[in-house]
Image 1 (tube, rainbow, N blue to C red):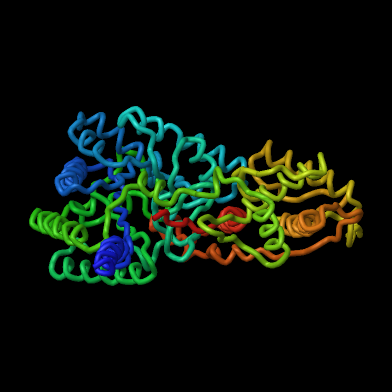
Image 2 (cartoon, rainbow, N blue to C red; image 1 turned 45 degrees about the vertical axis):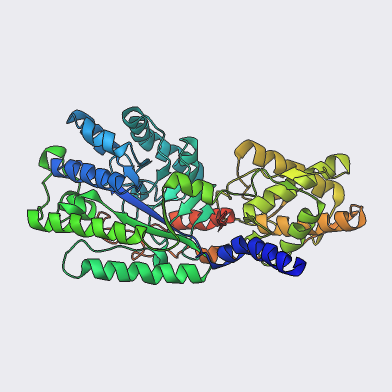
Length: 497
């Protein structure tokens, strides 16, 4: 009798465990709209209809709104459209979108600091108008077309924007969310990007099949995120509004802007009907949940931020940076190259000053270098340094990071400089010795390391910048050079289950 009773108790205890084991891996779907056409009033109606349709289905999307679109809605008295959009996440999609010069064009020759300042100068008015008209700070940003640039990231953070949400090919990590530039990125999703065509016929069944294929692949790998995007104008226009006016660098005056061709009403109705069925289909899939940009910041919260890093953590980091490295994945969190640079520099600065290591170190988020390293001129290239000189360099580097909120382009030790990677490798050797022996070396051996995170950044080419709004032959080697430097900040975004 007792054995039977214990068996029943054990079986009851195992029920939630078995259910958990059988539950499908979570798949999150983020649906976003580039809400941009400020020419045609029909786009206003399509935007409202989409926002209301999704609300009726219990789905919240992220509508990234162009500043001029918001102002046009206000001038046209479309408080009904604004109210419908307010039920969803509000993002930002640049101030004037395709009017020349577009973002990548005006930043193509800019450096890090001046590019950051220029983006903020040009784009802050659009953000301010979104705040005024919609009553919220936009949670996400995405560039118009493929007009991406790394200098936008610190400016976006200054504006209070938390997520980079778009699709292009400049940088990405395993077709899933990642951190770059101090922000959560849902970008270059490629194999986990799904779009049902709005062309009728077999579009719905093909879209459903495409979704199921990606859903199955993500479920098999333990879950993840699917990105789906549209433009409200796709429902009502037969051609994109901006391609009609700003193609290949064209810059007509507003009085010369031409409306795009419209879709027949029957095609528009079919597109709405198919979209309704597509969203219902996705909602019905096992383990699927629609999420907004705001919810993604919670699902992919950076657990390295606010964490206490102790001796064992620092020792693991110190050893990792003495060889080829990119980012470091640990138990429940990840560290970028810039994170490791900041943690080791702050720890070593304390050791250099007091000869003791703090009980715990907190991560300070910093950007990558602003320009490519160039060795100092002259014949001086030491194989080792005395501790006083290297300790002074550590303190100077920590001060630089505090003041500029980014890594230095070079680290000076007397009259010669080290690249950020070589400095970090050398620093790792010093800290490993201190953490294992309790002693600082009288002389510091110079070490070299190679970063490998650059492989996640695309090479510059005209194909990379294929947006029809760019001038013919446009490409941006300076932008992509800065992109590789900011890959110091790249790391995977780990799903908080």
